[in-house]
Amino acid sequence: MTVTKRILDLLLATFALLVLAVPMAVVAFLVKVTSKGPILYWSERVGRDNQIFSMPKFRTMRTDAPELPTHLLFDPSHWITPVGKFLRMTSLDELPQFWCVMRGDMSCVGPRPALYNHHDVIDLRTEKGVHELVPGLTGWAQINGRDELTTEVKVNCDEEYMLRKSLLFDLRILAITPLKVLRCEGIKQRDEVEKDDRDDFQQQPPQRKAA
Picture 1 (cartoon, helix red, strand yellow):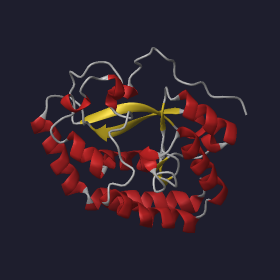
Picture 2 (spheres, helix red, strand yellow; picture 1 turned 180 degrees about the vertical axis):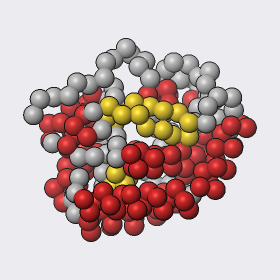
Picture 3 (cartoon, one colour; picture 1 turned 90 degrees about the vertical axis):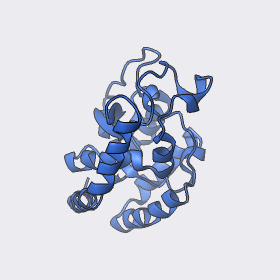
Picture 4 (cartoon, one colour; picture 1 turned 135 degrees about the vertical axis):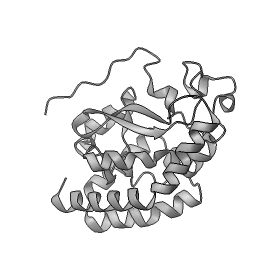
């Protein structure tokens, strides 16, 4: 990560945390009063060079949901909290990740951090060298289809970002992202939810591959 990009990340994250402090407090309150359990859900994600880090989200599922991926549940909507669907559709559940930007685990722009047991994504990114990038809050794939893209297409978008990355390109992605979020484009009731973050299939976290 260049010094310029890091400075931009710190400035944007600080500004966002200040401006969004009240909305985040409201979301935290709604999560707490509408369902039992913690406000935040921390998941293990794959960062730069395939290193594992903890990433927070506002919790969107009930704590008593079955230990199964969402697509295997008979009625996934039954397990989503009263405000969960809205938080996902508006991406408000991802606001706590600005903390990861402050820590340096994430950038404002980059490939979205994969779940530690999504080996297909991890392997493809490693093959193309994308794993050397710092993951981001938003990215080229997120404004070009997001959940509607296949794994291969997402990674190809990540590779394209890697080859084209620049300050101007990052600013372009940041400018487009709010429009995509407001339109709820490319968002589905995706498998990437809290219960998928757990080791449902007893898989081990990926090991860092030698350079």
